[in-house]
Amino acid sequence: MVYRSKAPLRIGLAGGGTDVSPFSELYGGAILNATIDLFANASLTPRSDGKIIIHAIDKGIRLEFEANAPITDLSQLPLQIGIYNRIFKDYAGISQGFELITYIDVPSGSGLGTSSTLVVAILGVFAEWLRLPLGEYDIAQLAYSIEREDLGMAGGKQDQYAATFGGVNFMEFGKNGNVIVNPLRIKDDIMRELEFHLLLFYTQLNRESSKIIEEQKNNFSNKESSSIQASLNLKEQAYRLKEALLKKEISKVGPILDFGWQNKKQLANNITNPVIEDIYETAIGAGASGGKISGAGGGGFLIFYCPGNTRFDVSRAMEEKGVLLQRYHFFEKGLATWISYH
Image (cartoon, rainbow, N blue to C red):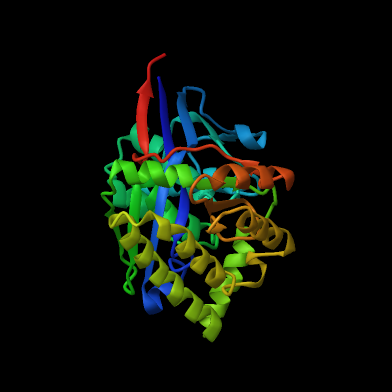
């Protein structure tokens, strides 16, 4: 018997960064995102030999431990081990051995919420195996707690909720720490149009999102006026995009994305760089009406809204820059878990 799960990655469309503490606690945040058919995957097979095997296929790392005790060495696979330790602590230990296999459909740290989505997927297989009474909000909050509190990893709150709930969501982050996920009922024809015009590109640039987010948090804590005003503008951007999609005013998406990108660059120094700026200006020159980095910035994936049939010119221009088109479809479901008897 094998327990399996998959959780969808997301494209951050508007409001990115307003879910990061302390801004969200001081001013409240708002984000609009949509999940796509790229996933973080996990499989768990119980073992009878008292061994724990953790195998991250995409990283080429395989670790082995003794069961029935917390794991102290988190140097190689901190997410997987951190989740095991938290489950061991909260649910009175796991005495049986198991093999956990994980992989993500895109490179980790590429701006599609990979780390948080992987945490959600792994929590899903543990919940399925151990029959843990966890609802959607419970899993998302536990994933956030493991990453941000147990492991001390910098980041926001949107990714855990996007991966758990799935679909197109307008998320509000209250000053009291509460998160409200509002699913948007957008007509199918609008989603198909958005999918046609919104292109996703992989820059092949590596970056460490944690350093960018730490600088962003420091700017908020130090009350840097430019960063705070930019974040307030990004919060407003999320409301603008929600209204445009619900009113079927899809031609406004490009300029709204560009408004967000110009403000996001004010949050931290390394969100953009000359290479990213060149890619962005090239896409605009080829016909895109706006775009942004998905995630903290510094590299990873870029998205561009391409009106009319300019998607073909933009794709050619990106190919000449060595930027890879990533095909995708919007995916309306969130975390899925199941049991395989084969």
